[in-house]
Length: 528
Image 1 (cartoon, helix red, strand yellow):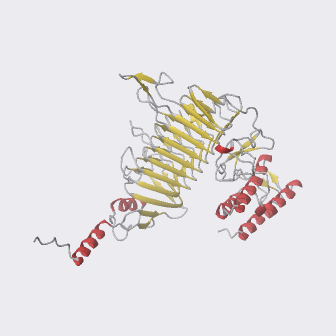
Image 2: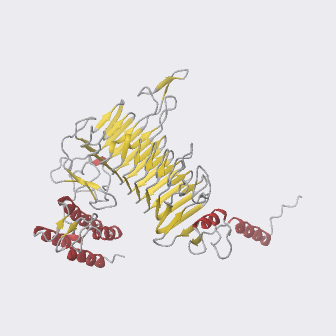
């Protein structure tokens, strides 16, 4: 009889397992970037999981590393570190790294002899998260194929949280960010960036997801805010405003060519595109001679893919070109397009209307048209600027309920009383007084009626009242953190010393008391 195979003895098995775990296990490391530990060396150590700068420098990296910057500090770079995809101020990110900025700034030096260089580069194996960090002043070098991504060039995965990308430059695409991988932008600002070609704010040939973010005052030939080519772009509860395209749109969804079709997919949910120079959104196929795009490839017709643009409960207004310019597939759902130079230009044969759309000039099979009675773009509560539907707006209570999201752009509840429709566009008008802020609102109304509270403009006064309404609506739904955050932000708009500045919304003899009442309410809510 054959002897059975002997298993590895328990002790030997345990030893082998322990050694394997010792080799493969990687524990996250936290590295403080401070005196003796530069950000450059911290990144190198994190990438290599080693100590490259000695005992007096940065800790060795280990697994997914977190780099903590000194709060409210500025890191200025005057020399290039490497030239991967063009000059970079810092080592390329090739591992999993989180940088906690603590409101710090990364900037390229403004000295005349500073070389052109971007601030951050993320390689194909890199995964970078930026928290509360500003990236500014980057400049993509002016060399062929290198002049992309003035602030950040991404081939891997990047997540921006509560961060700012501002005043960066690229000779070609992606003034702020050039994305070839996976880019997620949360509660962030992309502003004041410039590109010589496409994507003043962001140029994306990968996956792009923006939530609760504001893309403003960027410049490019096309896609002054956002340029999406043959990839997927999703905007949720976000605002695109004040961008300038010299020959195109603020948001451009493009792709393809005659033989390749277009695989660009752009979706806007609860978002606002307002006050841009150029078209609001353009959905197009590059270098295509026929809008239906087919060719005889042998054995029949090959129907090319078309660029697809989907707008759901979104608002497109006051853009100097068309609100939406479509050369592909356009799907409109409960959206508001008005006061543009041509609200909806549909050049293609594929158009779908889901829900009830309000289009000021009656184009694109509009169910409703005319003057929507909107307020100016302001902070009406929530994470991003919006345009309020005023009393008597024909867009109030007219959306098709089955297509309505649960909340609006400000996260105000759209789930209303039975038989009451939600509002068309990104903004849901609140018509009731939330119990949790009723006392504060009564104080506001009383003092405003005797001019003890005075708006810098009437619209800004109304906006402050809406902010308090939103805070109360949050609190009544037990969203305490959001309610506390809203009241904290409202405090920043109140002039309490009688000398209002450009950021203030309201002043007056009762302004200081109004601020004190807000602070007292935050205390009662146990806000942090």
